[in-house]
Image 1 (spheres, rainbow, N blue to C red):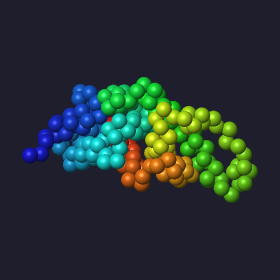
Image 2 (image 1 turned 180 degrees about the vertical axis):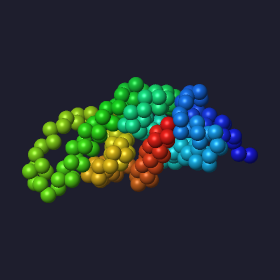
Image 3 (image 1 turned 60 degrees about the vertical axis):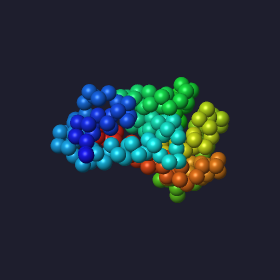
Image 4 (image 1 turned 90 degrees about the vertical axis):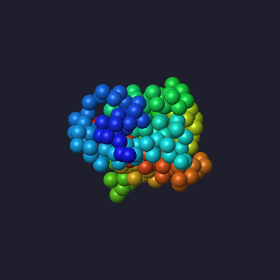
Length: 195
């Protein structure tokens, strides 16, 4: 038996640790008409949070990185709670925020360089962006690179995506983990759009 629309919203919000009484104009409108889209979104969110190639903690931290990147405070707070439930430490949560912040700087900088690829002067100038958090991350090098890849994909930086995808693999990450991380980022981004 299919869940009612109200149960769909509640179940979706519960899976992300959002308060059930939270209002969202678009989600509430979908909810009012028992939209198939909301049911699909609930299934998609549930599936990516329980990915085959990511632990629940990794999935929660990746979801948190999307919420931080998209500047959604309510979702950020809820996903911090979910990540903590799955064993994330305060240091890992803070490093997630640091990763997102750093990727936003890098994504803008390296996207500019990519756009200006015919200008050798820009290509040869040092970036001058400190990135010490990347050297020995609390999250582990492979997972930090995986998170960097997911955020860079959301932000549309081809050079960063290519670089971080290669780095994930060089640190032992599989294409299956990469695929799950990108799918998670895509689904959470789609949720934030209507939240």
